[in-house]
Amino acid sequence: MESLVGYAKRDLVVPQAPFDDLTVADIAARRWCAEVNTVLHSEICAIPAERLDADHDVLNALPSLRPTVAERACAVGAAEASGGSGAALCGAVRARTDRSQPAAW
Image (cartoon, rainbow, N blue to C red; front, side):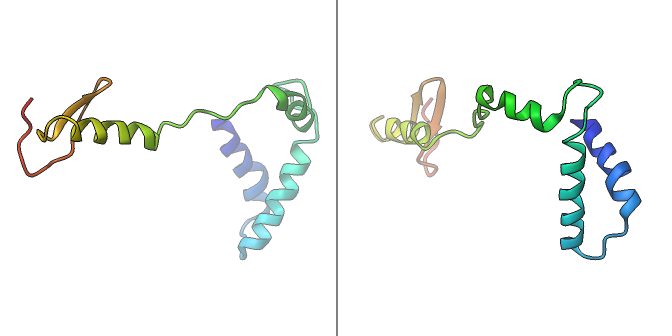
């Protein structure tokens, strides 16, 4: 993936620069992608567009690193149920909901 940036700069941006208009740059990038994704790639020995079509069924979305609303609600709800101390343990995470009082750990 890292080499893709350098490849795009060398093969797309430099030969066609400068782009005076973002729309023109976008059209050039779309044409370039269509061109390079339909020819045999030496590293994977396949045509990228065809390979992506073949792999589409086994590709899944990556999990989010953000906590879900339910995890935050668990921490807040547990803290409120702690008898007003403002601190609670929910799973392995300690949560403080009342910032006006020091935590009674």
